[in-house]
Length: 239
Image (cartoon, rainbow, N blue to C red; front, side, top):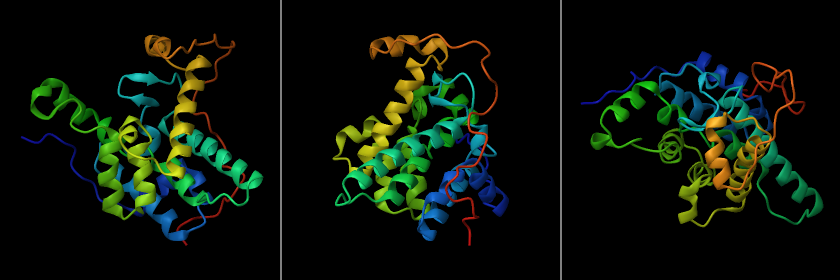
């Protein structure tokens, strides 16, 4: 009855690939939270057909909002950088604001941790063949991300962001950090669309949101977007 990839063991090599693909994890000052963010992605990948985060296509949902180059890691890193910038701006201008920067960084990095499940080609083939059986998809990535977060012991403040970053969060009262990541994620996709970075097949969705894609410059570069480590915190996180 079940058609799913065989679960792989979680190895130090797999954990190291997460650190390599998401170097902003070093921005998290709490060692336990850093380790759990890495563990969450290692757990999600081990339950999928994907070897590492950079193997996931840069899509918002399977088949929609496809970025013309890069990988899912570029989106995760971009959202994290935007969300952290928002938090830092308010913490600088209003020091009395009680914003948990670690939760913002962690939430940005794991908000799409359910995508290895929803994007998995083996599962997609099963769901597409007969949606009447388990649905299409059986679970969206924000919902499956809750399973991942709870399985590895992420604090509920971070797991809440995994669920609430998308429209599932419209049925909840979002936390302050959840609002920051949710807005950063929405902004990332809106700017990517308006900048003409998405596959033209997404234009109808952009049009419905009153977003007009601008023509790209010539000489479109190839490959991943983020090619260097962030300037803040380059030390290994698994101390």
